[in-house]
Amino acid sequence: LAQGSNWAQATLANTPSFLRKHPHFSGALRFEAMARGTIKHLKRMFAPSHWMLDKLKGRWAPKPSAGPHKLRECLPLIVMLRERLKYALTYREVKMIVMQRLIKVDGKVRTDMFYPAGFMDVIQIDKTKENFRLLYDTKSRFTLHKISKEEATYKLCRVKRVTRGPKGTPYAVTHDGRTLRYPDPDVKAHDTIRLDLNTGKILDHVKFEAGNTVMIRGGNNMGRVGVITHRERHPGSFEIVHIKDAAGHSFATR
View 1 (tube, rainbow, N blue to C red):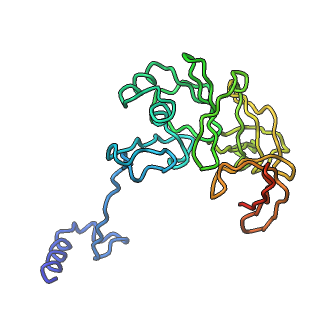
View 2: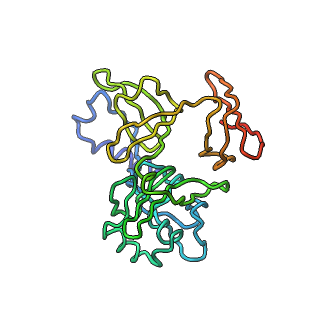
View 3: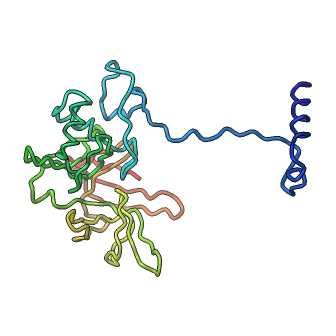
């Protein structure tokens, strides 16, 4: 302790006089750890369980790039091609596939094999003439649902919020990070819009109200599909929505 205080006094004595005269300078020395930047690796045991990676086949898992979907709510292209579709056996083979510009996500070629594809995204592989939509099964896992070429031209987006930007321009923000300017004035938060992937324009929208079919995208009921029967509003807290599925079971969710 004595050594530490002597060292602090010596450091203070060596501080230039113009710094000591500064109004914000205090004699107390404060040392802070610097930020070390982004973490570029992901351990296999910490990877989302819905990727269903074998915990004994290696120490590391693919770390998704920054993108429209969260790390724990996405399926990177490498997991999709290697673990789900089995079009590749190794990391190197996946890299060869994506670098040949064969994989499209929402109509755009993606050459990053760690690109985070997520709920409702459209995956197109022209070479095999296949189109998939990423949906959830009732076990909270992503499933690649095959769709037709016509259906692959649009996707459904949930509106997170509607607000105004510069010069009072109204815009809607969707669940996949899109900013859509001048939406229909009837579109509000929690509604669903149908988006044309070629033009990026809103085709039509569905209100979040009783009688409409919904799919749960989070929580214990993730992946369940049903019809909204009732919506409890709790100002200042979470709304509770009551849903009835095709088997006649009713459940409540946030």
